[in-house]
Image (tube, rainbow, N blue to C red; front, side):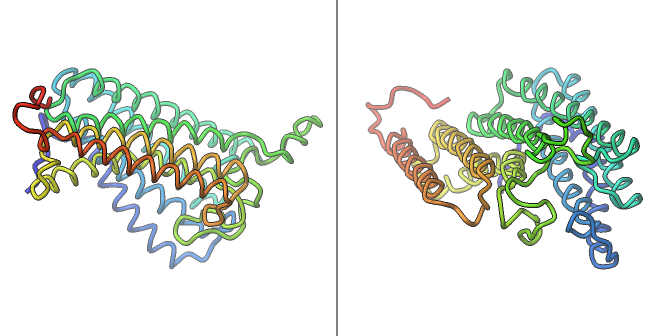
Amino acid sequence: MLLIESRAGLHRPLMVVTAVMAVLAAVAVVGLFADPRQLVGAPVWSKTAKFAVSIALYTATLAWMLSLLPRARRWGWWMGTVVAAGLTVEMVLIVWQTIVRGRRLHFNFATEADRFIHNQMATAVYLLWAATLVVALLLWWQRLADPARASAIRAGLFLALTGMALGMLMFTPTPEQQAVIDAGGEPAVVGSHSVGAPEDGPGLPLTGWSVDGGDLRIAHFAGLHALQLIPLLAFGLEALSRRVPVLRPAVVRRRLIRIAAVEYLGLIALLTWQALRGQALLRPDGATLLAVAALVITAVAAAAVAVRTSPARLEPGQQSGPAQ
């Protein structure tokens, strides 16, 4: 059984939000089938469903990470509480604007009420990002028990912060919107997650990502959920080490985690570049495929070097010291 070390109980406000989001996600799934309304080309309950699942994963993961803090737990508790409050406000605004009012949420400046809700959402997101940054710094500068897990947690937080920051690209006016602004007008919508395609165009199942053009939500999504994926990789390597001797030294697993984090950052950059060129995820051109190949080749080569130089492969007299 894989043990996950915890120095304190899980952060209660974050876990309360996790439970509420799990219930809301179930309600939203029912709403997808029971409510025929559409909003910006998607079922009116789809945004609530997707955000509820994403927030539940985020808060549960952050609660676990905060439980590992050896020191500065009070700071961690307060930052976790800020995150819980910010995400609660965000979800309340999502439900109110999309389900109750039946109006689009993001980029909506059509009325004073729409503008107010949009600005409150933005404020909540900024607070969320700042609080997560403080948590990342707390975990970065403290010594955690396992070096591989520590690297995974720090990398996951850094990549999640990067993914959140990339969301700001969506708020840049499109050329059509900028033309209205330059002419002295006030467009009802400022910003878009789609590049080179209409927002209400056809999208992939479940995610809704554009199939006709670029979509900035893809890199945003990939960055956010590195918070779960990189630590999961660490646990997977730890479990695999029982059968694969070269993975038993923590220093080797740490190297592999760091390689994965760098390659994942490259993937986020690639997805952003692809979207900004107005290219759909499943319609890559030659340049995109070449970049993907480069990521795969460098990842495999770096991992091979990390494993071949494992202390488990060296003769006893060749080992330079204990893995830490």
